[in-house]
Amino acid sequence: MASESQADLNKSVPLSQGLAKRRSNQSASQPLANVGEDRLREILGEVIDQRVSEKIVRLETSINRMVDHFEAVRRGEAEDSALRVTTDMSAADIALAGIHLPAEEFYPHTTEMLADQLSIKLHIVQKLIKQLELKGNLEYHRAIKTGKSEKSQVQKYSDAALQRLKDSLKVSSSVD
Image (cartoon, rainbow, N blue to C red; front, side, top):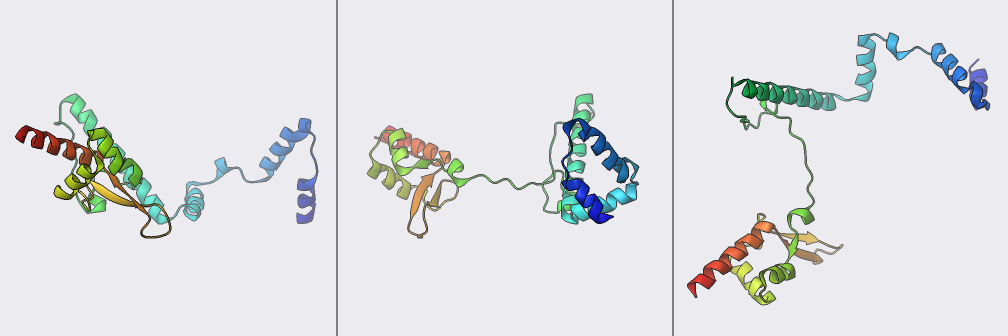
């Protein structure tokens, strides 16, 4: 019988008969609508592991808490929104998600670009970077690997580094 159904699957079906064939196949198999809640949980349990399930529950709880709080603010029953900071994930107000921000987006400026934007020479920018100790400080600087070798890196700086350099130049020009 299994070989007959396999043979039936391999046969070509005219397009005009496709819908009828699909309906007959669906009625032969157990429709999902008639599956009980326990069976659905069992099926989903096979597909979704416990960690994913916990994250979904935490996310749903977070969304519900935020909606409830915003509704309370709208009704005047609560102050502006404030979130509690905790390291206990089960007590967190918001389900935390990992956000991957490429380093190139956070550190968009090379040393040459900084020199161009500040309208000063490259060696002056390098001197200021050293004086202000920007290099090595993750708020301002990151060496981004560009090849297989450890030495193949480009030195990139954040917008905060650009602003710090601008401020430094303002202070030094007002002293002069």
